[in-house]
Length: 310
Ligand code: CP
Ligand code: NVA
Image 1: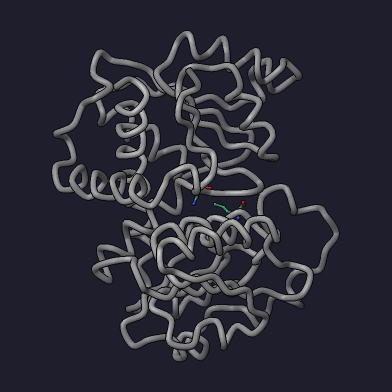
Image 2: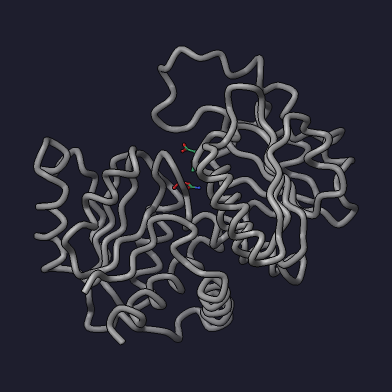
């Protein structure tokens, strides 16, 4: 039987997403009290791209679950030099309980996951960053009490993985999601359509805007991300000029709700998409957000293993 994977945010239904977040909160409250990987069972974590938070939070989290993390930079593997990802996945799945993969195109994740009987987790792709969104939603629950009915404004590169994940995961969590970026950096229409479909079901909503002030107006959560994602460094596009009006600074943040929190998945480019004043200011919860990667991913792994193994 095909196992449940977590390749996109909408691989979890609203109820399932809530279950994972409830479990994450429980596991955070009793950090060393859950050892579903005791044995130890192993989890392989593959990186085609750089990482600090994802790598360390998975490595620590798998160990805290009683398991053995196997962290692999793929340049040193055969699939980093052309072995079929499908063949590699079928081999590795004989060794481990789950696989986690950070890569470029989403088709690479699908290929790794094809023909395996263990769950595969997307640790960031060009299209989505769903593990980050579980951490973000956990942070929103902690700081604002709930996600349902809250307004989240994401301003900056509305075409990137974070924008797509905010749309899908935010809609799944019943949020009113607004994304705003300059012309030429809009989210994929198929993702917007899917998010709107989910929002119609959860009582949330989805808006794609051009004006950052309109997006942030009255928002409970203000989020941004780098203007240059991994893999885009040499594409020759001028990003600084069109993105400048989308910087999260004190003037833009003043338009948000008085209790608004600021999220950034990190790493931040201080002085570009976010100012020092905001990053280090009282509304910023970015380090709690980074910590929550650990708790959210431990819960996700636990949940997926329970669902797949009964
Ligand atoms: N936020 C995030 O995924 O960070 P890393 O690239 O350091 O893993
Ligand atoms: N959009 C960024 C997120 C980094 C965590 C990137 O893909 O590089």
